[in-house]
View 1 (cartoon, one colour):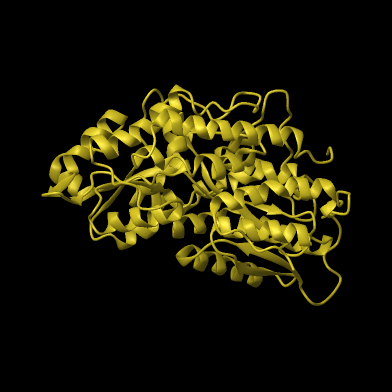
View 2 (cartoon, rainbow, N blue to C red):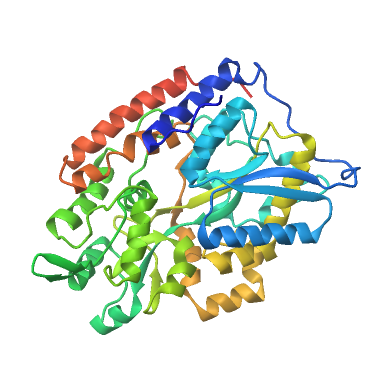
Length: 460
């Protein structure tokens, strides 16, 4: 029987760390499979060729994705996409790891950007370059540069950037959402610096005795938002070689101390109500219910919050400090090397369909995610959307200060196993900032060492 997926984030990170070792020691029969050949004539059989697709959306996003799959089926008779929902991003990754070892599972999927270096180094993803000039050609120059694989990552010193192996799908940045009516009544504008953020949050926090009835600010104490603060403080995650952590240095401490002070000293930021997407959901619900005047969350929730708020929703870029900076987030499409040539052609046909301006524009309008095709930005419906609701432009304009992640196979494990469990400790009064980050850095050094010495796969 295949191993069961882990139930916790740290177990997932440890479990995925075994992927490279498993593959290197022969889980793939001791060799790398050849990538599928996408060129040549279409399928020579009457029945459509199918490709299995795993996805991680619920709610409206799932509905929109399934609608786009139906449109793809209606657009041509040759290919079918068998799409199945696999839970959250992290649930789906756990299931994918099992599938890679048991030779089962999807032909293609979408995964969060931070795990891409791990999967590529493991040799389980197809190089997409042959498809670009095959029967369904595509020019990567049509993609919004800041949302591409190339700009998501910075290569480590002394290494070459990897070839194209991932295409952007639901891409986002963290932004500020605020109660526009409340801000107008208080004569306030969205803050542009950390100090302004602190002052506005103080102005908008309300208490009745010992009970806080409205938080001025709510930020999930989560990796993504802390990385934004790290960048704004002028810091970085790893050194240029990718061999040593840097997040525990002064900028990282300043970023985490800022969150800690907002919770414990100013008492204007709600203490963490949970981790991962549980905290995100609480922040969204508090905002809609008027229990939070401002929140930081993903642009992905723009349509949802706008449609459900009983007040006018405003959106603004994240404030700066020593500089401005944000990470990008969301997922990328990847095609697995285990997929047959036929299934690979079907998968590519769908990816080609999804990269076109009409589909990327529709996806963005219905969800709030960024349109990934440059030509989509020139479509009348997108121009009209931005004219009617400038909130949709906020994340797009903020791409000017987007910062890359290091292309390190250890990135995901450091995120999930070392940083995620420790970031909220100072905020909860369970540790000081320096100790929490140094403990995470010590763990990260071990992850990086093991990556270099034990988790090497066959040279590509």
